[in-house]
Image (cartoon, rainbow, N blue to C red; front, side):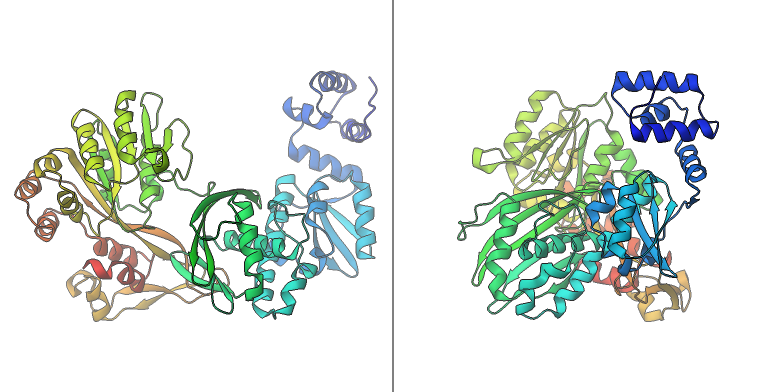
Length: 572
């Protein structure tokens, strides 16, 4: 059987020459290719006749090329990247590596792209030497290298004058697959670069704040706000309009707050961005919350629980009924913990329903509903409706009022497991909060099976962290006595490096306080005892406080004493 496709003809010749394929095998593969409408390589791979390594080795022998298995994208100089547009690199599955003795080395996944290699020699005006690399290695390098371009853009923006902003797009080659990334408009380039840089630095929020004479753009990274750039005032209307267009908002409405959402793909990642606008004295401000769906932790083992706390939470979510409350301020990771709980029990034999504000991540196999006050779909009305759908587990985004609390308690008492959040500083404070709402103490005592308080602390950068001898005073602030850790215990701190952007921290982890209502604590609840008394009783029964859990993580070198004291200062 003849091979008419030029690429398939090259592959067939190379495989037969290397002894990887017979004429009979080629005929069978070509027949399947005709039936399925696929290329020869895909058919042979599906038949397990050809592996990716086999293909690389065959091309290497056929074309006399060197094979590399890894690419150090951080050491690729900008000088060889700038002449090659990202779309060209992706379409032709190649990435420039460096220049040695006047020859540019380029890694490629398919050596048959001869026209592309000719174009490269024209672009560089010098010879090009090809190396072979696995496709996934090349694609990963493309994403990392071109995404790196946004860092240079952000640094350049900080130095720009008012006039320079109008020519911003002339020197910046867009590095990511953003919406409208092919548009050359300077404002679009500026907004895209901000989004790209925020994702690269793992920012959770972008704040665009108008001032009297200029704007301020700040990123929230690991819970801390950092100023990034100050665009001139004359760009304010254009920047705000661009963001509002992407979020599907009314650009003419500037007097009322609006909410929208942007969905985009950036460097291979699916990113959801919640957008909120609010009118201020100097114009609208915009806050964007970035949600990376590929990064959310959905396993209890990933959240940083100590062993005893993990066992307690694991046993709670296995219960058939009762209320589990997660407490803490906004941004303390409560929703992530609830998702992790649901993920750990999400099985076909359970009917799980959630009502949230908003639905941040989609959980397969879970029916999720978003509240909508405009049509009277509240936590209370949604929860009441859920009880008619034969649920086993219900998650309520937040208990805000008496009606929601009473329905949740009723659901727990009638054989349902209910998970929810409530805004209090510590675990015992949730009891007082429910009482303040008007819930009867006997209902709280009989329905609540566990209360988890939590905070997020920044974790030390693994690249630059170093040990030091802490003073007795520093140890005592964390609640560590000399008898427990000695006179000068070993703590850890981050020096600051390029990996952590000079902060000494990279990422966050939870510290926890789990209260399991025992019979003694239930008696205190029935007596309407204040939360401090309940807390002292819980501690006497073995409950570890937020600061105590944080102190353990300090001794383990996970975070610093300053970070734990910053986060738990108001609770002790």
